Length: 408
Image 1 (tube, rainbow, N blue to C red):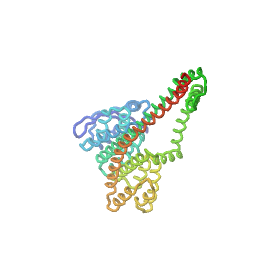
Image 2 (cartoon, rainbow, N blue to C red; image 1 turned 90 degrees about the vertical axis):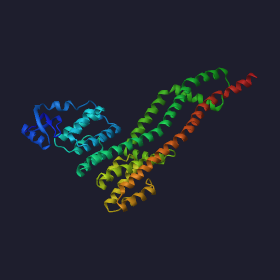
Image 3 (cartoon, one colour; image 1 turned 90 degrees about the horizontal axis):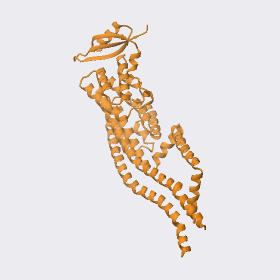
Image 4 (cartoon, one colour; image 1 turned 180 degrees about the vertical axis):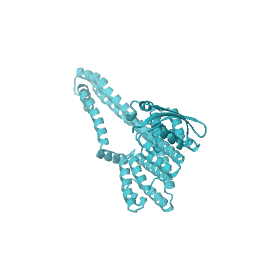
């Protein structure tokens, strides 16, 4: 028998009126289901199933990704509502209506409709992996089983907010050199394409042999003006090729290893990866997620292939009864301080607390590293810019000294 979609109006125990849609084989079964959920049915009307999806489908939703900041706000509000005694469906109704991000609002509405059909919250969230990743779904599932959903949602909000702040700090350290690098490239390209050809015509009229630096600069300018499409195509090809390379399994592995060993930014990448690992694993363990599943999730969400490989190796060791910290010691990406603190946590039964302390320490380390890098990179980039532009100017004016000698 095909099910029918019904629009209903019900009243909660608190007296609040709730409206929604639900599928059922007949009206009697729907009434029984609503009563079992603690509602008092007021009005039930059969409707076509198309109206159900009309409210939640937004063009491009499946291709869009909600920002982590919006998910953190949703989690904190959701936790507050559940803790205040609101029912799960009522909280989802309110959040779906008041969430400003339209994509997230549509996802919340779909989650609410799945819950109305009898699905658990974790299963409903799991249908939207681009918005709620495996970490989120697993923690919510543990909260449902343990009866502490509000606490788990609160920890999720804190964990996501820490991740957002960590990303912001790392991005701020990376943005400045990229912007200055683009500016230097723009200035150098403009001089090669427009300024140097003017000097080339001048020197051609005067005749004579040009100094080697000047001749090299003029040759580069002539090549760029004559074959600019090749230069432009090579740049586009390099960018596309690099993106494809890091998207591949082998390329991603090599690129993550290079980032950890980079002379200036390597320490920052390593500290941010350790902070993310510690914070995520602490949140999972505290929420009651089994250790093997927690390690699997941490490996998936680590953001670095080297860290993920180490975690999966540790997961295999834990399956065989070996302590987690003991296996992590064998991987250079984990410093001795981290493994020793984890070993103490395993001995005392307070692994989550130790991991939180590790995460807090590395959060502070990242903040200090960003401040140090900013103060270090700024003068270095100024020197690079001065050397690039100044070197070109000096090369252009070298022949002028010979002209002055000839005039004398």
